[in-house]
Image 1 (spheres, rainbow, N blue to C red):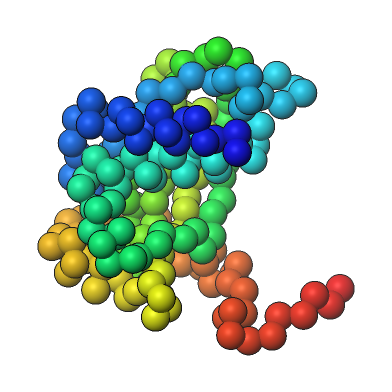
Image 2: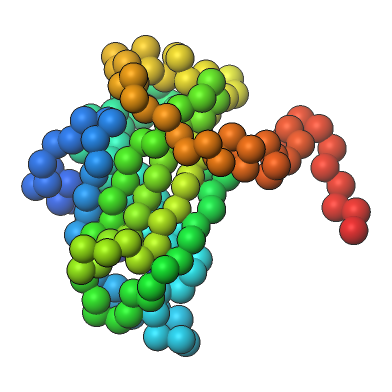
Length: 181
């Protein structure tokens, strides 16, 4: 619920920001609010993932793919995510969230997201997302065809991403996954 006001503000103001191509870097200027901060006085580690949600939403809106997703009743879902921290963003500090598609495979869109302040990377995350429909997962070639886009030839996720996805994979939702310690 803490992000609902930021989401509403984003939905009301996204047209004021310049359009971007789906394979461009989308930048969203923000400020660390009291609801973002933990007892250590900086943005809470879990809050970064909520902020990243806004960055991905901003990219989809400004690139013009959101309405096509809604029309097809596709829902973007995160499959895996990881983050690294370098510096702390503190209360009231201005920062820019950068979001870009770092790569694709048959199942995932791989997004790199950064928190940048004063021209420096403060935190960087990698998110593996995919689209779901009522019929299940939407294959990436179908997604690309629906949006009429072709990935740039140079688009390659970092080499560590594929082993990371494999190493952190959970069983299919159609299979049992008991929690046996």
